[in-house]
Length: 341
Image 1: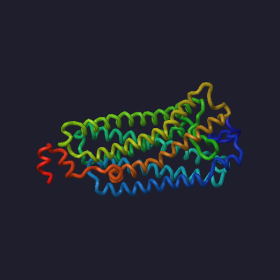
Image 2: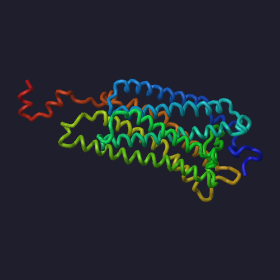
Image 3: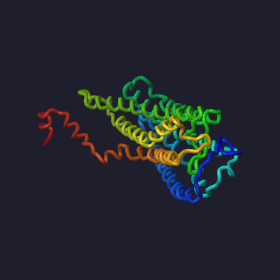
Image 4: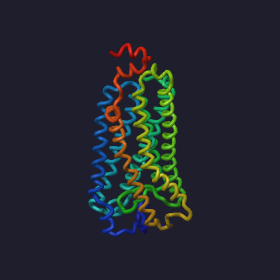
């Protein structure tokens, strides 16, 4: 069925060395990874400063952001090290990795670091939904510990799913142009089940984030426009967190949904997109590569959502009136004339 005498992670990829040189540029891959890691390190530095003086309502949200940025940084570091090395050396997978250990490792980390941002986005949306709609349902004490526990649970779920092909559900194979390993878009039951699990879990995470964020934003808008808004506690923190969370959701949707939809469509395609010998149409292989590269932009853009959508930055773009002007605006006209010299 597959290449004669080869391990199960190898399938035929008809590409010349010249084509690989044109497609797999080590300089582009290295620059992409360095920019992404530098962005995430900058975000971690800003987060560390914010956590020192953070109020209790923000502590758990900042913890989730730390988990997200740390995950993105490690994802770029681990996967980038393999891809950049392969692009620079153009080693032959069957020679360097005859037992598929490196390919299986890369497949696991690709699934793990791909799903974690989507799952963390859903967890952050759930936390903000409860914090805005039910602010007194949970005590503030221990919020950071609870948030780190949730981050650890997300990591565990993504890791378990990533290990399924090593347990016989699905397969990791070398993908076009021969520089990375990922799940197999084949017609076998295990490949279909694993592909659908990956696509479904990612899509549900994005959909849940959209639903909960929409409700949270509607609730905040209702509070701001209610008659009791002047007597309510300041909600600047909530607005800042929701702006950042909406930005993270939009970035995840744009970067990941094309790949998730493409995976589901391909594994369910009739007739099957992959031949019994493991061949895929070149257009299908190119689409998978393009969608995967689009998805990796999520790890670069996530930290910039937090860096740019902070209150310090937003206030420069949209300055708020002074406290005295706000106080005067709440007074009746006669009182304002009496106080203004």
